[in-house]
Length: 408
Image (tube, rainbow, N blue to C red):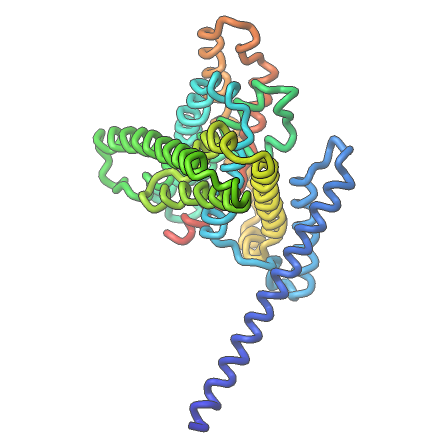
């Protein structure tokens, strides 16, 4: 008995120490989020700095401090998890984007958005994949097969609409905002679907049926994901309208809206659909139907609650990305072959720019031929902004890259 207790006590002490370290890390991370909000507020009038840049800078500074304090072992407070991003952080960001979007502008430009987000992503992925296949073989960076090259194309074809939208105003530039925002949402969904398709197909035996299967799979995912989001949004509106929760408690209305929005995302993941598209269209339907069936108090609460959750999730991601820039393992890898690392980074940057240009300008030209009103046409300056906005890579790329590392 005494021997059993003597072996259990050290384990409990180790567990307690581990739990305490996690609590300390969470405290520090929450304090960083608070600091980002306060500093971002103080810099509100500065046109060159916003919350995203503030969070990145604070993340980098924190990473330096942690790196020095740990003796060069780590720069992170938390370990990045794909589940943390896809299950907890991404849903509130995408849902709020759909909930707050100006629906008229979005659906008027839906064809253009789909062309940029779906067709453009495929073109960009193809150019990046072909480019890395040619250049990486010459650099001799390791044994990569066709699946790896295509996965690189899918990862770097995913843009970061969150970062871009921070510097655009929906009221001042409605057309540009709707195009960049809409492309970002469809692009994220397309990149995830494309990446999953690459992982599931046997690319060592390529035949025409694989291409047809992929196209069919994409349209199936797009349509079913959209319908699931629409049905969930309509169901929430019907339940709230018929049962009239507001007569007893506005808390129940707000809770039901939040839970059904999250349920739509999780159901999409359960059935291997695109949770991004599902929760986005659920947000659009809820803002158009459900929101008008709740009490005035619930309308104010939900509007600010969804915006707050999205804001905190975005800041969380940018702080982590800032700390990840000083990941000691990555810098050790770079220091072993700095020339190769610079060459790889330069090649990828050049291919991303070429991939964006290959579809933004040609598709814009074709779209302008169809549009009759000058206000609906995309002028060259707007085309350059759309091209430049898509050069940023964010959390979806990080999550897909992390997934690829686990597969490898």
